Image (tube, rainbow over all chains, first blue to last red; front, side):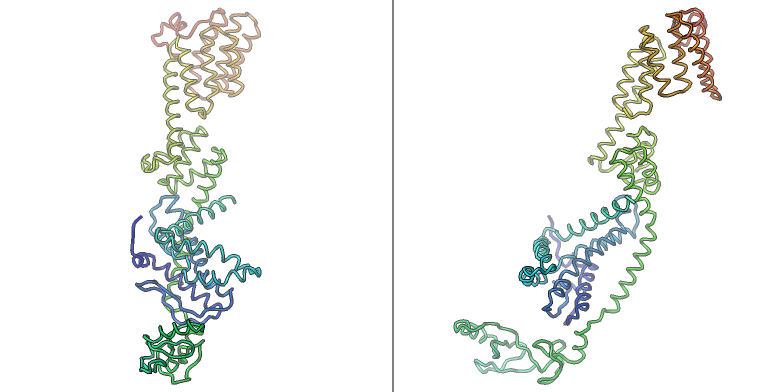
Amino acid sequence: MFFIPGQVIALLTFPGVIVHESAHLFFCKLFKLKVFNVCFFRFGNPAGFVIHEQSENFTAQFFVSMGPFVINTLLCVVFCTAAFLPVWELNVNDPLAYFFYWLGLSIGMHSFPSTTDLSHLWKAAPALAKKGNVLAILSLPLSGVLVVLNYGRVVWADLGYGIAVGVLGPIAIFRAFARF
Amino acid sequence: MNQVTCSSCSRGVSSGEAYELNAKTYCGPCVTAAAQQAKDAGQPVSVTRYVDKSICARCSTYIGEGGGIAVGTARVCAPCSQLIQDWPYPQWLKLSLGALLLLLVFGLYHGRGYFQAGKQLYRGEQLVETGQYQKALPYLKDVITIAPNSDKAALLTAKAGLLSGDVQAASLALEGHNKGYFEHTDKPEFQEVNRLWKGANTAFEKLEKASKLEEHDGNEVEAARLVHEAAAAYPQLPHMDIVLDQYDGGVAFAQKDYDKFLALSEKGWKSWPASGTAAMFSSALACKYAVTGEPSFRQQSEDMLAKAKEMAAGNKETLANLAEFEERNRYRLETRQIISKSAYDQKFRGAKSAAK
């Protein structure tokens, strides 16, 4: 295992940071939350942020926190799918394909919500889960897993997730389409 | 920045360095002691940064005491209020998103050939996984025309080719991949194809040796053994059962077991009707006539030879071989003596060559 400073990783994968913060902003606007400040990318820790008001509405909390996870994961699958065949299966040297794969993996790597976002959900979810709130029930295991993965960033869990999504996603899609 | 007064020590302190605890304002040094006192008294302890309500909480513009717009416990100026209510997406972000979408559309259009190849590759892979090797080959051959250096496509094509007996397809796929070079030779997919390929090569070597041995009398048993070994090394070789029967038939002929020779040649003719199998069947029937004198065997032998010639029509080389065989068969039918080709050649043709 080798150590690369977070700022260097963020620089190499800056599209993922921008997409992550854009997704945060998108869901804040969707749920009409006040946004106090936005930074899409900077050389610092964190590499990007969206400061917004805390909502009492759990649905808004869920989507603002988990939105980037969903959006980044989906975009990772989309861009990696566009590049998967020439890069992984066909061994074709196509620069555009490699660009898309870098883009997809960069976006996928920044899928995980911050621990702060997850802790808000973690606190609010149990009471609502007892009342049968589906999002709260869903957010409990999801938050748990994501908190662990967040800590796993020191051992490249974020890159591992990006690669897993960027490889397994396209394989599943193409295998399904090949049947028709 | 405004000055506020610490409620504990009455000292003036910058608003940016002041704190609030239970609705009172404190300087940095006093807030810790005040928090401890509140705690000891059983009061709630919630220390927050002092918010100067005379300046905008976002941009620090002076808005006057009670001015601006309240946002939670803070107050902001009108432009900031507008901004935080509906934070706009920056222009560069919109343009980047648009450019990226255009690039994605172009990329998908540009990569349509890859998608087609990918679909063929997975279809072929699924067919290989279900053992439908012959059916998988056309799909996989299409893929290697687009991506000859794809390890997966080359190995799957080679596997499908070898397991369906199409050694040429396998050879083309392997040779076309970086001139036969594979980087990851430790992968099980490579190992499997390598094993099959070696098996096929071993089989061809043995068949070639058997073919050379068969040219001379007395080698029938050894030749048949080699053919059996070839069949074991590469059982997928097409028509291997017929080749085996032919060599076993040769052994039966040499051992004068004409019933077995007849049975094997008849089996060969029925499973693969061709001029070669017809001629062999004709030869066996002639042998049976020679040893039994039963006219029906002679008639059948002549009929099969006629059929062999009919099936070889247009093929000069086969017709020439049949003409040579017809002469020997005629001798066998006329004299009821069974001699090998080399013995016949020595007796009547004075031939140097004993080739069959």
